[in-house]
Length: 353
Image (cartoon, rainbow, N blue to C red; front, side, top):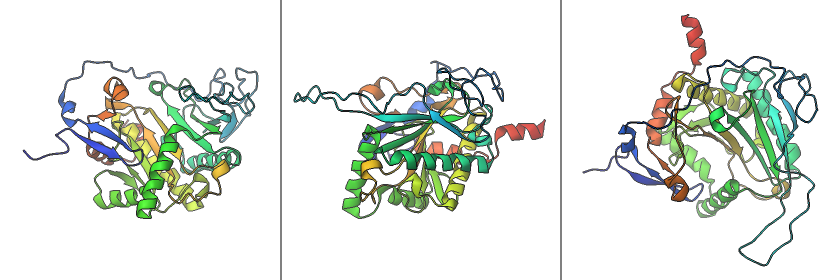
């Protein structure tokens, strides 16, 4: 019997993290009788005077938001990282190690209206978001080695507020995910003399098996090593190390590619699509002047939905105790996403009514 990647189980290597993932495509044939997630039927209002992220509303700490009309950034009222805290004592015991951890956490509202998300925003509104990300990255990157921008969208992903927003956590330490990526990319660069993710982007363009959408400056692929069912990665066509390095053209085209991939996500199941997403680029702070040619700025989307708007992928059991596992192949996921329209389903529904 000949091996067929879309039928037979196998493991795939993720060179960006030095990890393997189990792919079991035959499991897509099994019936599902597990948990079905509920779909939020309640419509989000444009403005809610009780929503602490809306313009002009008082937050839990008594502070009042500005009456903003674009993006709006404020210090997180309940931060995971503080700037001025005591440091733990060093220990000689290899089994009980603690180190200092300081930082700053911010919340960034994308838009003054609660019922407007990225896939239905105007291009210039998404450009404003990226420009604010760059502004915050420059300011925080002067002091902190890592600035993590991330968005949790949807109740399934733990988002407790429907208002379009993200968080920005700056830390005095390099977190685990970027720390591993730093090592893996550097090893590849020292061995081959080229950035790992630039080589990867070139190969994906050549193969055209996992490419979802592209424009002049960016591509979106379902990574060869993707863990989540419809996971995607945004990669530049020209080498960029940090979000702060983007040109005006790259910012505009990044806004375009973000709008296109999020529209495709929402068209998959005709629902406001949940995900966690974020950006990774070269470290900052004390490493801002280092040689970081091995780093490539990229974005990652981790959506949990698998078979429908009500069935999600659970990372439990084998994934927690052994290694990541997926059923739907990355190639099949890319093919499904690629064939979806680039016009948002709500606009089609409006035109048909």
